[in-house]
Amino acid sequence: MDDKKMSETSESVSRRGFIKGVIAAGAVASSSAYLFRTTPLHGQPSAPGAVERLITLNVNGQDRRVDVMKQETLAMTLRYKLGLTGTKLGCDRAECGACTVLIDDVPHYSCSVLTHTTRGKKVQTIEGLADPATGKLSAVQQGVIDEQGFQCAFCMPGFVMATTGFLKTNPNPTRQELAHGVSGNLCRCQDYDKILTALMKGAEHGRNA
Image 1 (cartoon, rainbow, N blue to C red):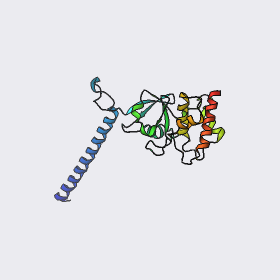
Image 2 (image 1 turned 120 degrees about the horizontal axis):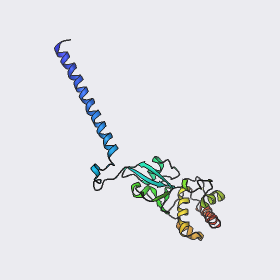
Image 3 (image 1 turned 120 degrees about the vertical axis):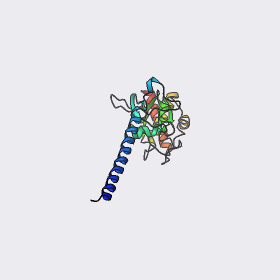
Image 4 (image 1 turned 30 degrees about the vertical axis):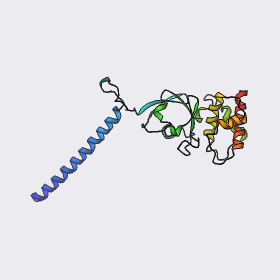
């Protein structure tokens, strides 16, 4: 091999090694930044506006550590980070109510709540309504079973959570009052009369418990 070819080969190897080195250094820097992004430097607090990604959420009575991006919604965290798929994503724009959960006992559209804002609060999803020790369904869940109030039931978790929250403030509603209380939830099958009958049965179970 003549000097020219040897020079070209050496240059190619050097260039390849340089590129690999840059990539490796970038990966290390990125990993380090991720691992230590939540650690204050020399005891100093995070910069103003900074958001920690690894946070603790209280969901269904349990503290859960989860990696959350600052723009992530609670619905996304519940479904795709914590595996709580009972919370449904319908419109994803706070219109249908399928993603309704309770935050400190108040119904909220989880598709429009940033996960970071729920730190220090109690989040409850439909998976957390049944008695964890016995598996006994909640009053509203049992009412839905008794009356078979839904067709496809995609919207059912949202209605159940909205009703559960409403009954905490008005455990003995009239049919009209309960209809108003869950009016923020929509059903694509549109069998609202049967749904309302099932939810009223749930309210009855709650009073008789």
